[in-house]
Length: 116
Image 1 (cartoon, one colour):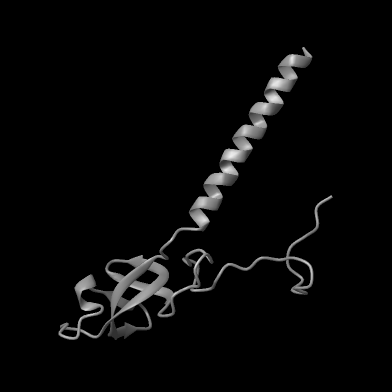
Image 2: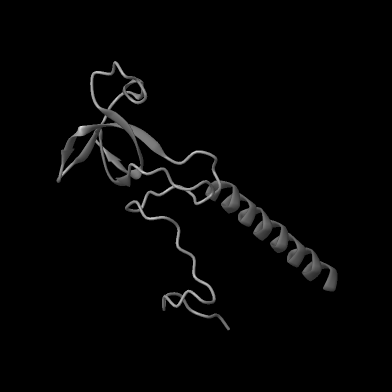
């Protein structure tokens, strides 16, 4: 009976460790989510129009293209992101263009809770 409990516990630890590894690899992707957009296409209701990547970085492009990081894409338009590339390792930003915020000692933000 004790052996069965020990095996169950070790299986739980392995599965929990695999979940943490998967989460860490996902959060540390090498390239943030980016899309080439037309800077001159902005509307308050839709955001920026997504265009071909060849419009970003080319001086002979048909539109004023620039990479737009994060945001939410809908029907060829993207909004809620930023033209500023997130710092490496900060994880992408698909929630309104804000970086990852982590609590901890000394932050004084008042968010989060202490477990017990």
